Image (cartoon, rainbow, N blue to C red; front, side):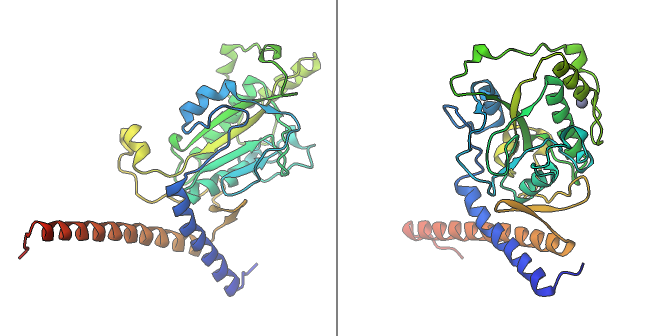
Length: 311
Ligand SMILES: [Zn+2]
């Protein structure tokens, strides 16, 4: 279907204005994912991991924030477009079925990052997803597969996953939670990702249920880190020292390019991708030019003060 020219132009303007506003938010605040029932708000993935065991959600509670540019709620765990017919979630009609990958792509391309909460309804109600350790491993493998099939592939420092337990009530004690018995050798078994059928780990889950063992319920948080060409690379990988100063645009595993706008993602056409890249490059050099002018003015004042004359 042809998009009218005026509508196309409006979308491009919206896209550009979004980026302008996003940059200022990024510099002042950064992306924030709210940690439920935790004492502090972890800023890095390592901190988040270390606090994972201390945090929990409560079944049926409403999260104190809505979906926005940084937060997305999903009721299912279909990461890629190839998982979308996954029979394990087929009956949950009230849950949105857009693959999580589109939201990830949108948050990566905005450059701002954000958090996708799996196991939370569109209305922000915690339902959780019942997952064995093997199914958690599956989800991580599925995420890695999907992001490796982006163009360009997404480096591992841009994302991390956390499985936060869901308690039946606030009063439930940690000691009341029965720990799952995990066979480490079995964990090495390969998962069948990027296909719409049950994996061996889903059959395991069903088998456990049939003998009365109900796997724990979790909210899975997929954290997408904001683009940080300087700070993060200094600390981490040496091979990524030469990252471009502007966030790259990724195509998802199905070849779509999305950008997060308020509480949803918009698919960009080729022309919009081109305009966005041009805008980002221009903006980068405008900021650089302003900083250089400030430095010149400072040096000029210094020279006047010390009566230094330039030829
Ligand atoms: Zn599996």
